[in-house]
Image 1: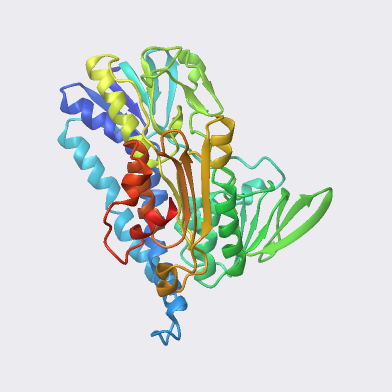
Image 2: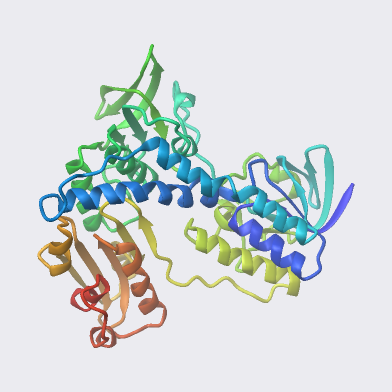
Length: 448
């Protein structure tokens, strides 16, 4: 049996943060991951996705300026862009492991299961530790209908050697929309099937409608209120059956992808043997990110049922808090700043703070500024058709409660709104700021 001060399960951003910080303070640390070190964001999510999006951004910009200074719209070369993506991904696991070795962190490459409240089975080893940190992230939801196992994952999409002629995505969240936009701009025929009445349910509905319109204009078939009930493999294609209002419709496609959500990857850890309380949302934790039922356990990132959004910067922040509480005792409570969230489609959708529905449910006196901005100079010079904003203002103290944007540079502009919300900046202070012009940020005063 091996003994550690801290043992971390999962080597994504939160687990990596905990392991490195604890080791730097002289604690004996071990870490395991059944997948390559680096986690979803660096290897199977945001980073490779954003690299691939780069080529589609060039094509989109060229299409918008065709006839206005651009003669030829470039094609997306899938093989080249995947090779470029691999140059980022392949280097990451060995680099991370080397960093662990330099800090005398013991590394394991296998799954883990709890044996008791302070022991863990890691491959052939039994591990005992004073503190365990669960940072296993999330994984694709299991599709429990006939043929559900035939659907590929988001990881599979990011590793496609060749882009299929047609793709069907099950689910209407950000993964489906982002990958659908990539595939459509790379020349594929794309369908999204979503069981709800509205896609991207956690974002402001009015702003989402702009993205729905843009998605359909791109040629993507977006089918709502349709529950997938079956996937069948035929000779060279798949047939997907969807039910809507009791009526069945079939869809023929070369490939099917499961983008129906990502629950926490905690249900194979035998948590009950360690007396760890959990729900379908993750490990039940207190304000110190410590298990409410086993004080030797902490959780961070997507595996914790906390108030943090499933975002990489949030996972890193939670990792720092967990490490601090292990090193110094529970002295640091988790306190979430405004958490901006982005859907990296084209146009880009970005959001921070309260939606209008949330502000209404909290019975706050608020006002809403919602308008299209496609007639503004920035939209015209970029020739974009989808540019809109919704800002929600606290009437009482004239601060920003929420901001929701769709359009160019929204992923950057939203950070300024997040800063204004965090610092409780008055809208008059924002209105009287001098912004560089003509930038997208210079549009902010006109959104208030």
